[in-house]
Each structure stands twice: as C-alpha cells, then as structure tokens.
Length: 440
Image 1 (cartoon, rainbow, N blue to C red):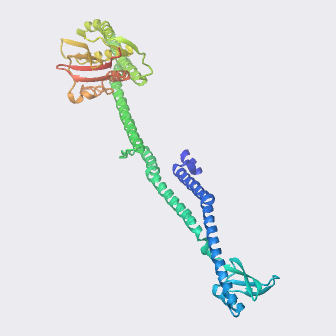
Image 2 (cartoon, rainbow, N blue to C red):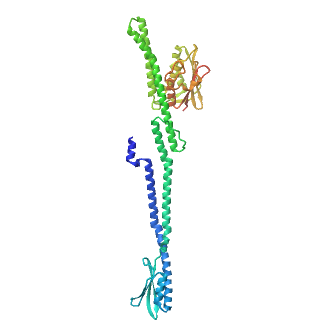
Image 3 (tube, helix red, strand yellow):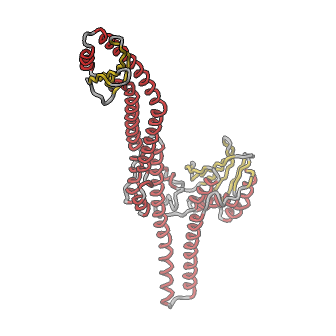
C-alpha cells in the first residue's frame, strides 16, 4: 500500500509515466536536432538560393527599365509614356535632372516591398536619371519553402513515430506488467494465476511466477498433510498414556499392573519423542550448507554398513547380505549417508511378514555412477502407491494414515549430494536404489 501511495505522489516512479517521459524527451531532443540542422545548414542553403533568385530578378528588371527608357526617348511625350508604363508595369518611376531635382514621379504599384533600379536617359541632349522601384514579389522567397516544408514533414513523421513507439511499448510491455500486477493481486485474493503464452522475457516471468505459486501451494498442502499426520501419530499414543494415567490415579492396582502401566506410558512417551525429534530434523535440515563432503571408496562404505548393521540385524533374526563390485570413489557426507541406509533398513524391518527375513545391499557401477540397491523380502508396496513412499508421513499400510519422515529425509539427503533415489517392487519385497556420481 505504501508503494502504491508513493507512486501516486511521484508519477515518475510508475513505469507507464517513465515511458511517457522518455518518449517525450526523445521527441523534443530530436525536434531540437532537426531545428538546429535547419537553422545552420538548410537555412543557409535557402538564403543562397534566394540571393541567386534576387540577382536574376534584378537583372531582368534592369533590362526592362532600359527598354522603357529607350522607348521613352523615342516617344513624342516621354513624360506621358513613363506615366503610362508605370501604370502598366505596376511600379514607381521617378525622373531627376542633373542637379538631382525630381522632374517626374509616376506611381503605379505597391511600395511595401520594392527593388530599386536606376538608368540614364537623354532627352534633347539633356541627361536625366531615371529610378524605378519594382514591387518585391513573394515568389522571390519561394526558394525557402522546400526547406520549411521538409522540416515540418520531418517533425510530423517524428511525432507519428513517437506515438507509434509509445503505443507499441504500452501494448507490449506496460500493459503486460500491469496485468502481471493484477495477477499478483488476484493471487493474494486466492485466484490461481494463468499460464502465459508469450515466449519473451515477460512471458517467462509470468510463467515463473505461476511455477512459484504452484510450488507454494504444493508446500502448503504438504505442510497441512504433515500437521495432520503428526496430529494423528501423537493422538494415538497420547490417548493410551492418558488412559493408563487415569487408571493409576484411581488406585487399587496391583504392583505388577502398576509397573506394566508405567512401562507402557514410558514406551508411548518415547514414541512421541522420536516423532518430534524426527520432525525437528526434517524441518532443520539444510541441504548444501550442512554437508561435510569427503571422498569415500564404495568398498569403504560397504564395510561401514557391515559394521553398523550386521550384528544388530542378526539379533533381530534378519540376514544381511552385502555385495560390492564397484571400485569408484564418491564425494559424500558419510554421517548423513549412514543415516540414509539406517532409515531404509529401519523401514524394511517394519514390513516383514515371513520368518525368513533378509536384507541385501548390492553396490554396482552404472554409467559413471555408483548404484546402491537395498532390497528386502517384506510385503512390498502396491504399484499405484510406489511413487509416494518418499512423501512425508506416507505409508502403504492402509490401517494407518501416516508412517513417518524416514524415507523423506533420505530423499532430501541424497538429492543434496546431487544423487538420485527411487523405489521399485522386487520379486518379493521392496527395492530402493540410490545413484551417486563417481568423482575419482
């Protein structure tokens, strides 16, 4: 709101008015350049043309006056002839004697703009000075008209180009930006932004915003699912804790049953604690910044997995089979990758339905990657739900709505290493594959 108020107070902060200002300034600048060019170049040329035309007209008028004086000298009444010639030619003829006194003034034209011509006339051996003033026709300056017309046409074309450019800029850029602003405002009111069909930068900007809003909506949905899942997972053990605590409050319970109730309450509390810790780890996990990368050979990692899980799984009557045929070295945060294998193996332990429980880890090389394949002989996952097992709190067990964040954390860690993780059903059980790029 403050930004909008600031734009109203200062119109130049608006892109629309900035474009108007820039186009106006460009028009005035170009007009000034054209006017300067006309003044210093075209006008000089025009004046040269006028000067040449003026000299031509003056020569013609001098020849005409010379012809009139010759005819006057031959006329019987030279004064009457000059008066008649002044009327016909629409000019002023003045005759002066040798002392400079006027003998004759014969007006015959407009004296606003004139060209003065003089000639000598001899009548009866007496010299007279004849001066004629010819009207100065506007046709003489007609040579300036093409330059003036050219300047006007250029200014008109420049103005038209400015208007056209302004319309194009407004339609192609200002209007889409305003529509983009309306789309953002609409999204704030809950309206889903549309995908743009434009292929330029503005179209890419709008489509990037659409992708961003889709990501935000997916994240919101994911958060709601996580909250609902946590609520469900906490509610079940919490209900048991409250029930056993209420029985303990009533008293009259044998020591053996009291101890059993207390043990159950503790176990249920531990379930809630583990769930909260797992959720806290999921929220606080920062991909790249927390990775402590080191080079590890695939065989080294296999030996670590053997030491970490072989004895523990043996106590649970689970047979661990490990096979490695790859010598590649991988850049990894070993602590986090051990957590990945721990989560995957822990997930397998929850889904055995046979006494002959087996988990196999096979390490192979695949097109520049080390592939870790962890497979169990448990219940597996229905094919239609396979792609969702890395979603937070997703479970393939229809009896429960949530399962935890273990596999989701695995996906975060593997992707943080630049690797890939996916799941597929084995012939019997579930198979999870991890690929990480070989660097040495």
